[in-house]
Image (spheres, rainbow, N blue to C red):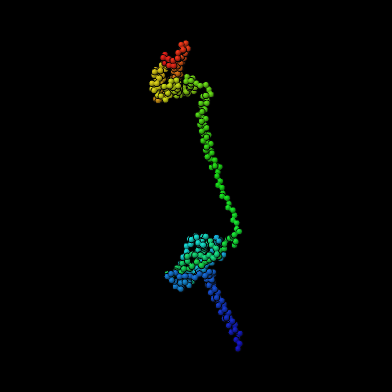
Length: 372
């Protein structure tokens, strides 16, 4: 019995619709199972915690580990990718990896990101950049990932992730000759650090030579010319004071004080009992018994000069010239008496020497009694 033409067409259309529906359901099922297939590169079996977890909870937690690449050399970086699929309300706690002495150690902090999610669950993906420091088959010794679902905790082990590590050495190292050690880098020292001590010594010697030269120079200059006596030196100083013309410049007090200083220098050179450092009273006490000095005139001059030096007494141009002239006259008078005394002493010495020659007796070395 043959089926009518219209019934055959309806039957064919019905079978076609059924095949399309079946293919659609198969496609949807494959799309739903594809993420689970992707994350099972290395299957990891979730393990319940010590208190135990319900089988339904363990079935809802899925995990997978991918190692890229699977073979490396010692020290080369590689990546461990961990993907977990958990219920939407679950909490995932990733371990803290801080052991730098492990055979597989982190090179950078963990990078975590969220994967696809739907009503049935969600995904979390963690990427670890690591390096292996041993040869052969090396596996991680990391703590597990804790997945908390309600009151249950499921631990996802990370100790099964491994990689094959090749050695960087050749198979036969017996004939390997290492390179010779490179020389130690010489420290570059600036030239001023090498010669600073010599420069310091030279500077000290130069300073010492200049000091000695500056001290010996006045002696050499004085030795080159004729040696002046106390009187000649005083007259030379008075002439220099006159050439300065301090009184004409308005410095009357300074001119008179310098004249008295020249007089004091002459007296200290001519009479050993006097000194420039003595005060006026001490100077007068030292020369009070000396008949060569006109004591009254010296006292008057010292009193007027002390008033200018210590009391700031103002003097006129004529007074300053008179005090300078008086100081010069005192020096000349003392020197005149000194010349007479020396001439008398020389005459007495010659007379005594003549008597010695006539009588043949020993000369008397004592000072003649008639000389002051």
